[in-house]
Image 1 (tube, rainbow, N blue to C red):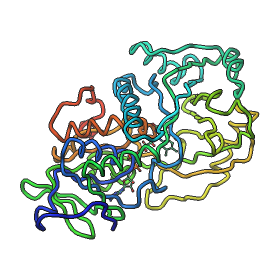
Image 2 (image 1 turned 135 degrees about the vertical axis):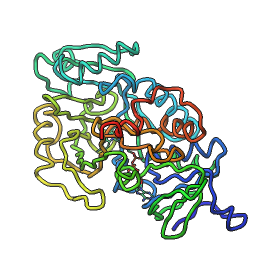
Image 3 (image 1 turned 135 degrees about the horizontal axis):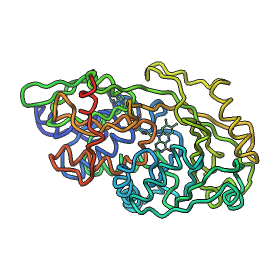
Image 4 (image 1 turned 180 degrees about the vertical axis):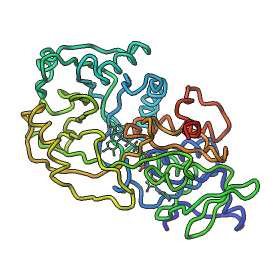
Length: 389
Ligand SMILES: Cc1cc2nc3c(=O)[nH]c(=O)nc-3n(C[C@H](O)[C@H](O)[C@H](O)COP(=O)(O)OP(=O)(O)OC[C@H]3O[C@@H](n4cnc5c(N)ncnc54)[C@H](O)[C@@H]3O)c2cc1C
């Protein structure tokens, strides 16, 4: 167990916290930072180390974009998320993001393009619609079919997840949050007016518990929230020095190849161009994930690269295995636990949550302080699954 800040006071008060956060990945780190910043006494338990590679937040880069095809109700959260990333960048003195713009590519009537345009319209987000010929003229990395639409969004770019989590962790620690690494929570339960979180090292009393255990949240939500863990494998392909694959010339992109077949890519920021398909992975137990990469993982991505990014090197220089935690409607879970209102769940980001970590940390701190969050998060509530049972 690594304890990063000292213990003080008598035994009883040492073990009582205003909030215990379970997990210090993206959501847990930002929840910890925001709770500690508001003056709460916070303990964060993490099963592994900071920025380990067994969860959902590793892999050097993540896309941030505002014109959200998934659901326009995310846009107010996204606007604040982008501002909060910039603030944290300033405060921490670390480079957390690079704005490259984004291209959303697909059939005009497909889920991606129609959803992006709906979000942009509802929220007045700046964007430009291009034909495939106009897009390939401007962005020479791509080869696109005639008839596809390309929506270009200025407010899109790359987040550096490991740097973001390190920044949140150090700001949280500076605000007094205590981190215990290699100390998994084994369960939480209520004893009268307090919550208790158990680990193999001991038990901690808390007024609030925040469940931010990502793919492992299943074991803490008592069957109240149906979660499924999905294995994903992104690859990095060599840009062989071609400028068209670097961030000043290549935006981040998502491409809907055909119905429900999405690929995405991130320009070369030093490790090659990251390309992956989104979803379509195997459902797995997070404790037994095959970390090797098979031909089955590579073939569809290799085919996509040959077809859509033909100037890119064909042999990947790196790959990673990573986990999505999905809900049936692919929306997040952010809110109080259906069985105990003092427990806050922040997770199940269904493969698109990283960009929100900066704002969801604030939202969790609001919920845990009984303040109304200044956004409509009703569609993310944990209770929505109870009604379906
Ligand atoms: C390949 C891939 C690409 C993605 N691309 C994007 C993207 O471009 N843009 C975007 O916005 N999002 C993207 N996402 C989604 C995003 O990365 C996730 O939604 C986000 O990182 C989830 O963060 P989390 O904190 O919920 O999970 P994690 O970061 O996994 O954190 C959970 C933490 O809880 C810890 N934990 C587990 N059990 C316990 C326990 N019992 N006790 C204590 N600690 C415990 C784990 O060790 C872990 O550190 C992508 C995800 C993947 C896998």
